[in-house]
Image 1 (spheres, rainbow, N blue to C red):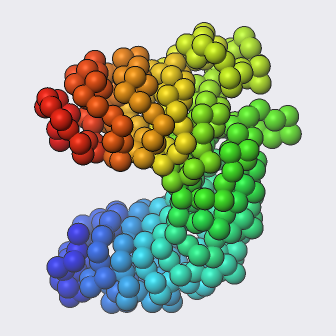
Image 2 (image 1 turned 90 degrees about the horizontal axis):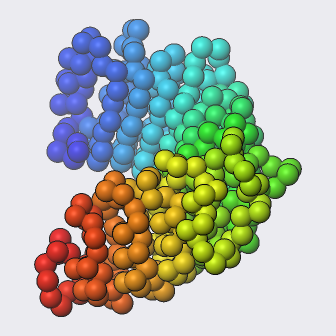
Length: 371
């Protein structure tokens, strides 16, 4: 947190750290300290070895200075993360496109959030500059639409993507789901965050997690964020959980034969791989019922660590209690904000000794759930 650091103070610190071999810069609230002067010090440093740059709130950093900074550090810089930097734009994007198409320069992580970059500037990234990208985050950017996602994901070679975060772009539709699925040719995608994409439909999400001959296999995710999506129902959660747990190499039954409406979710365990499954799940604000909790208990019992079901008004004490009774001790965090229907039957009656419950706002008696 650099809110109290002046630009002169930060520049003095850079002059000390750079000769000592500074490798990474992670700054939050850096509007005062990281501007054009700091960027110039980095740009003018010979043989700089910076591999990661993360800036949040650099509101005085000019587009041209950001572009020069990328040009000066691209030889070693593999991670770029900019949040709320309002002046970056076309020059910054073009610098990424130009520098990372050079053989030997490798961009692995690109994260842009709450920035005012035009669609044309984003499309300029379409080149070999993104060919080895492993993590792509385009969050809360007005110009990000289905075409941008389609073109940029096509630029990534061989299914190298492991993380995709497109949260906060409500203009996106089901079309992005096929783009993400098609770029996951090697099955490396492990984290998918689509929070707040209200145009996504249940049909589109179900298709995304269903085996289709013309597309790569559904992703075996470890982290899934579909919060603030009313279209997320029991069928979507069931298919996502099965895809994450499915052991394709030795499976006895093709995935398409696993019925979404299986009357006994515990039977899925015989068709799914042990020690596989979703680890972090956020389905807050969805329309799931206790059936989804039963499915998660059967598919993620040895993997689930964190679950957010806040504002899921159709789940009950019994559903959550059943889930907690089936998962292992690695399950340590549960968010239940806005669930006034839950009672002491769950809060004081669940079997876990390690579970931390966040969001208990109505408590009649007992003390186990107080946080």
